[in-house]
Every structure is written in structure tokens, then in C-alpha cells.
Image (cartoon, rainbow, N blue to C red):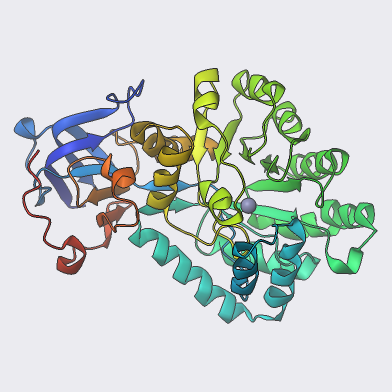
Length: 403
Ligand SMILES: [Zn+2]
């Protein structure tokens, strides 16, 4: 295996020893990559020799983003629904059904090409780990197709047969839960690591959500949940009770929800793109962090409520509108996502971790929030392999990046 040294890093976000705004970083640092892993982290002045040396030129390096919540296997889009929403219509869970029809009509080849395109789009924006859910099939064969396709591109596959009650089961939600927890789960569990449910008015009740997650656990899957997106409910406390790795959305949290989360190992994953594109109020991340809740940020890439795949964009919103510091938001999008997936080999830059690294065209991670919408990701390595190379066009002429 050949070694690569990235040296002259102006600000290295390691996420080791993170306690506040200025910690979790090293100045004038270097990272040695050996094979797919990080072999050494230290001062540029003490850097060991390597087969190849890359000069970061005083710019910032962060861990690859860990996007712990996405829906990337689907057909069609909902641009017209978005346009209507921006003109004043309200978002409702039922819109999912239109994507179900388009997904069922698409071929494996069409879904696969789209999925791979999204993964490449994410890599170009610095996301090196992505969780992908099913949930637009809602029949045994279609759900199995979606988890099988997702498993071609990630190990973090989530079975979300309980996304919404499909039109063919209208007014027969409990019968649909029988299907999800029976033959559908049997067909999908071999391809999945996680079981998820949308616990919300218009989707599944707390009692139905409990049945879904219990059935998944009995099949060896670990629970996660969509909850409190459209209004307050009991989903968050159920997720905590069942030991879910993460409960996602949390747009409407009660004091009791926050106390339960703070006393648990369950991560609260914020999805800033959803509030942005549904015009919902932004949850108060400051209140969560101050209460001791572990917070992650994910894109929730999906055609209905958040069709962005950009973690830098979500970081910018979390800082601008949710009360996070830039350091907290970058942590939540890297190490926080790793916690939400119960991973300790990604989201950090430390010896032994996977060499998933992002070199920014900026001297500090603060620029991710400070320069919203600007493509600041210059180079990306996944498992030590360069997957996005430096581009003169992308780098542009930033002038001196000296601090
Ligand atoms: Zn979702």
C-alpha cells in the first residue's frame, strides 16, 4: 500500500476532544493516509515521509460528511408540488404517494442510474458516508427492489416500508402494518441494517410504529424513526424507549421530548433542508445542545420535502436559523452523523479511522456557513482514494488564502 501525506493544513477538524467552538481542531497540521485508513495525525513540522505529498496550502481539511438520512431510490420528481407550495399550499405526508407511483413504474436500470448520480453528486459536495432508505415501493416486491438497489452503493440501508400507507391500503392501515411486519420485512431484512417508521399524523400512529420497530428488532435490525415533523406527538419518546439510534426531524419538540433525548443515547437528527423547502418553523438546535442532546445534521434528500443533497447548505441553515455555531454544525454533519449511524470509524480524523477527507477551498470550516451556496469542496478522499480531484475551475481565483 502506498502512503499519502496531506500537509500544510491551516485548520484540521479532527472532532477529537470536541468541547466547544475552537476545540476539535489542530493548526498547521498534517495527516498521513496508509491504504484506506488514517495512519498518523500531527504537526506539519513533524510529518513523516510518504510516497506522495499533497500541499493543502494553508486551507482547511474536515472529515467527509456523514449524511445519516436520505431517500435516494425513487422515480419522477415533484417540482410542480414544490412550485405550488411556494405559492402557499401546505406540505402533507400524502404527497409521498405520487412518488410511489413513479417509482413502481421505473425500471431497475432507471432507478440505479439515478441513485448512482445522487451518490456522485453527494461525493462532489464532500459526503463520503450516506444512509439510504426504501419507502417509495410500499409492496413486498417494490420495497425489496429498493433496499437491494440501495445496498449496491452503501452498507447503511434502512427498510422504511412504513413510510406512508399506500393508496391500495387506504383505511386499512393496520392491515398494511401486518404486511410491513410480515412478508415485506422478511423480504427486505437481508439487505438492511436499519428499520424506520414515519410516526406522524397522516402516516403511522405510535402503536403502529411500535409494532413496526419491534418486528424489525426481532429480525436483527436496529431502529430509527421519523417523528415530530408536522406537529408534536409521542414518537420521540417511543424512539428513546426502544433504544433507537436516531430520531429524525424534531421540528416540534416538547420539553418532555428533549428531557428524554438528553437522558438517552438516541441522537436527534435535524434536517434543515426540510424546514427550508416546506416553510416549516426551524427547530431550536441551541435549546437541544444546551440541554445535552446529541445532535446530527442530515439532508433528507427526497423529491418531496427536501431535494437538496448539499451538507454545506444544511450547515449554513443550521447556523443561520437554528442557533448552532459553525463548529457545532460541522461536528453534527460529520461526527454527529456517525453517532446517528453508530459508527466510530467515520466522522473523525484520527489514527485508525477511515481516510474519508475533504479539502476545502477555504482557510477555515466557518466558511461553510459564511459562504452559503458557494462550492467550497476542492478535493475528496474516500477510503484513502481520491474521488474528487482538485479542479482549477472549482478552485477559482481566491487570491491569497493566508490567514
Ligand atoms: Zn426522511
